[in-house]
Length: 197
Image (cartoon, rainbow, N blue to C red):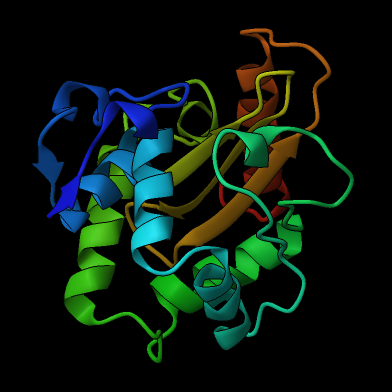
């Protein structure tokens, strides 16, 4: 159990703010981070595991030599050169390693729990989920910058056949609800190109 205090609060805290003065389990904080992008939850988890360096080390351990982990929330969502960045192709590789490959570093129970949270996430319904054909299931994680960037990555499961991994990043310059439609259209186009639509 990890204590949650008023001092931990930063913007967007739907899970942690109601818990101020009490404590949340690591699992509850992880669920809040994945499903609804609770920023204080992410910070509390990073601090509990020893700060940013263990997160950097984890990326390197799965063969990701380029992803940057430089700041805590909400600063990590603010544009500052290459700080806190990941390349789309690296996102695809990481999702493949963690969620698809048989030799994933995650235990079967951990992988199942992470996928469950990604399937259940209510965020970004107009993004990847809006771009898949009927009957497909989407395990995804959104990312949004306050100044416009609109992203979504995930694993798409068709009714039959192999899953498809998508990493869609739209570097918009203003916060506009229409940004999500760009991600949905990119998903549709990719599936057509892959012959999976």
